[in-house]
Image (cartoon, rainbow, N blue to C red; front, side):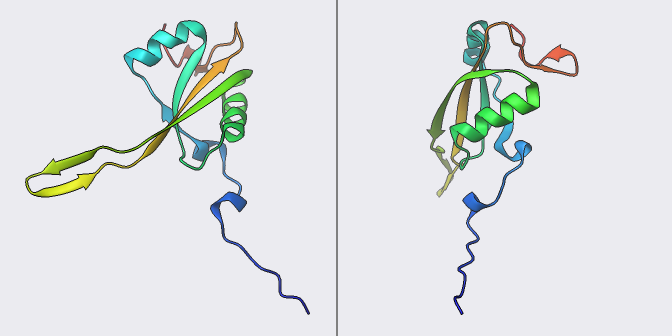
Length: 112
């Protein structure tokens, strides 16, 4: 009898859409990019471009043309003599098809 190897890897588990997209990133730079149909999201560190594309397309009913990801390292901070580190995070720049808009409850998620 062969013993099957059971792996508990996170990559083998199927993540939901809300686990991939954490929240939209709203900054001055991201608001300027909305004119070019580019939107910025904070995403899970283990999410790849295919996961991000599928999550955005199914949640917002738009067509994604390009996904670019950036992995940011957390800053080292100091409080007195104690040093600490903020957590690492990942940003995704999502370009959608011209004419599509990301809306939540009938109003645009990002204001131009």
